[in-house]
Length: 152
Image (tube, rainbow, N blue to C red):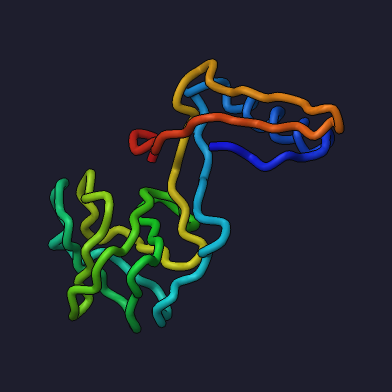
């Protein structure tokens, strides 16, 4: 991921955060900063149906009021919106949704967050961070992240 050019003070905060992760050891919540809320009309608490009890499912049933929309992000499991991040790719009907990526674990009875959904991520490699500084002292940062499904 590449961050836009930023002043030194902002870049220093990012570098401090990335260093605090201690390479691939630490984890953090990450989500879509532009599409934070559902495009559908979900309300209240949502949970994955107990039928979502195996890995590898593309279609899952989610219990809740209202509905999600195509391209909504959902966070499943974890806490406070952080868990495993999925995108709704198709509304199948009756609370059933095709998601990407497929399920990676047993989601039965797990919380499903539809607003400010985030996944748990970590740096992809210990020495992956790169930065540069231009003549105007604008800093650029680049680093790679991967989902930390074993951190939940």
